Length: 402
Image (tube, rainbow, N blue to C red; front, side):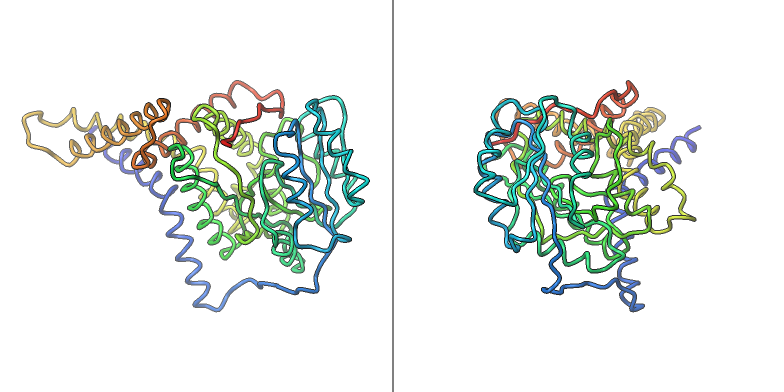
């Protein structure tokens, strides 16, 4: 019996290690091997390649940031006659639609799709995509700031006909005094950036951040209206159709972290819920014999992050406890006892970090155990939410720090 528990214990530890660290190591090794063999993908950078693009911006009740977004969008370094700025403000009732309409006489390439009924971002974008006549569409959120060269850095990749989408980088603007959630979120996205660079060199990025991603308009398709992670679904379906999805770190969207732990929890649970929904709809990607590198990357980088590691963590703790209980309590400190104590300390630090954050007492030293535990807790909550059923793609907006 003890042998079986030990095997399960180490298998679970191995799965968690592979999910968060091992995949990065394996991907890095594969990239190094490809480099030594002289195998690489072309990196195109033709300044003369300037296709027409549409910058599509969902903007539901965004009066607090819409003026800054308009200014940022029209300040991007790209020929004005080759870019359309499209705001999708369906259902807005805070003056967002009226404000943008008031600017249309000033900006001839400014467009808007309004409407009085809020149907959700997915249905709004499905409707908007039918009106876009440029070969490339770039999606970005209203509460983000884009760097000036963002469009140039994105479109250069589309000269390669094998590229179907380009994922930009999400950067979290964190002050020194920010909450642990903000610091943890920033660290998480830095690590994600590192993995996406490896993914691009290996074959393709598996998923794009909705804050900034571009796709060939004719490849967008139509997304189910109850979809929670539209950016993820669109980019993975593009990749499944044989196109590469490129990661471009020099095209980035800057946003503030969530206003509070509660706001960040809502966001993480929604993402995790959408992750399980995506796993169900992208089941065909598990066929490594058909999709090769894409299957390997999708399972390793995404599916295991949502569906394996979070559930392994409590199992590891319980199996560790069982192994300790099987030992002679009079024995001196053993490996399993030390490991159990280490787990307890780690989770206690996470709980303390959460409690202090709620008290507005911010200690950055605690953000690693806190944010790691927090992410996995939200993943389990997301699974429970998914099991209850998803009836709508409309979700509650999360408040961002000012």
